[in-house]
Image (tube, rainbow, N blue to C red; front, side, top):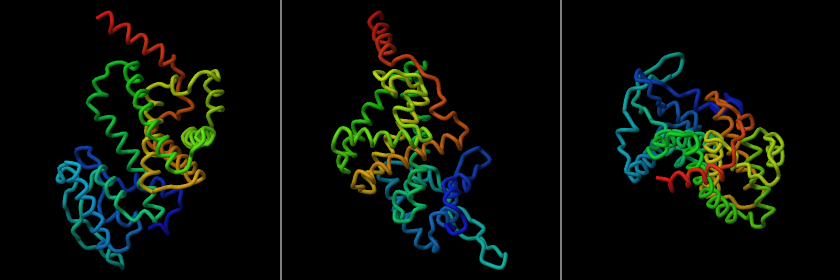
Length: 281
């Protein structure tokens, strides 16, 4: 299938082969996914399914919640089709599949980013702690704190990849911004948002923009570790690629591009306000 589609098409291929059942639940068909991931022999893909099933059980997830066996109509040539055993797979299980697939395939690398980003989006939407937050300010504080934590972890992963000096890390971060913000680096984002040099971009983001940047940071950290990336240039490229994939995902779901989202008041003011309210209780 990789020969039939351009790289641009491949970037949204996983969305194209997604199915929705009568209850509005999304799923992917195993044989379709195997072809999309460039496995010509389904028997080889079964081995990947088995690894994913083991990972699912190790994460204490119910396998039956993510995999359902069914018969899929498969082309056998000359326009004829035959029913063959297959599986309906959840987004989470697809995420586990691409983590265990042959990462030397370019389409697998794209799938790893796609399902990682989409799974994190779903996780955040379902996160009980986050959904209990009843105001935009509380959501901003939650996500900004998560961003601080994951930026520290991202910095450690980048250091392991060879991004050592402060200016090298600044360049590395800029690549992530450029991928997510359509080519805009930190300076251009400051200018676009009307921020002063002393103002941190992250401190003036709303919850939607913070969430996008959180996905960028977490997925880049995972990519650096998973692919054992070494070298500043390769690390920068990886950060850009993940940022761009997050941007592509926002576009696919009809969201507002991060550079077009409104500037919010400083998170430090919000934090002081929240602390004062807690003292008054």
